[in-house]
Length: 216
Image (cartoon, rainbow, N blue to C red; front, side):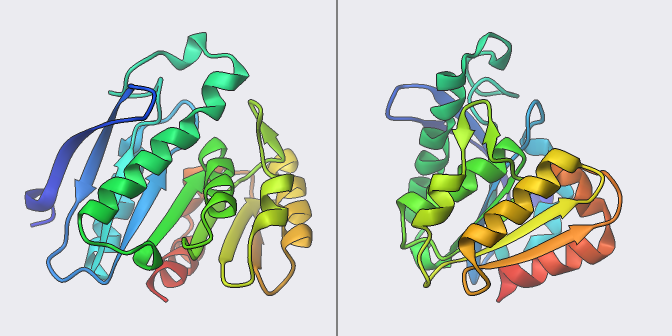
């Protein structure tokens, strides 16, 4: 049933990089979620989550960031500035969702690890995007930094930050970012264990909280 609606798409960024994505469209969808993977994962790491979102009438687009999966370039040859350009991939994906008739108000972002950092940068840059989830963010992953981004988030926006206690750099970063954002703009979950990024979605409690946050 779900596979019928999964569409392989190719997007072109402003700097002419071809980005691959899996778009799961849902008739009568109430919202759409952009999914940004961790490094060196791919869009497929969100496959099960996309199917779960579809049950809640949420469309979703998981992309391969540049240098990963079926997108162009090779992350193994990247400098920090190449990773920083991944923000263009995410912005291009948002435009695709807008073309599918979702307003920015209906678009949510979920990012894991470096994808979490890009999520924070996206919301800092575009205040029309209202909800984001950062799974295992860091203050600085490959030059993709988040402290300044967190300072730019507005009261009309909300970020759910999820980290694992044993993933020490990320849990410390998560606490710091939550502190910068404050209670009105952020919600913080630090779980037991040491999983990183999308691996935390295997925890049913985290999975439910993340899904609930997106459905709101």
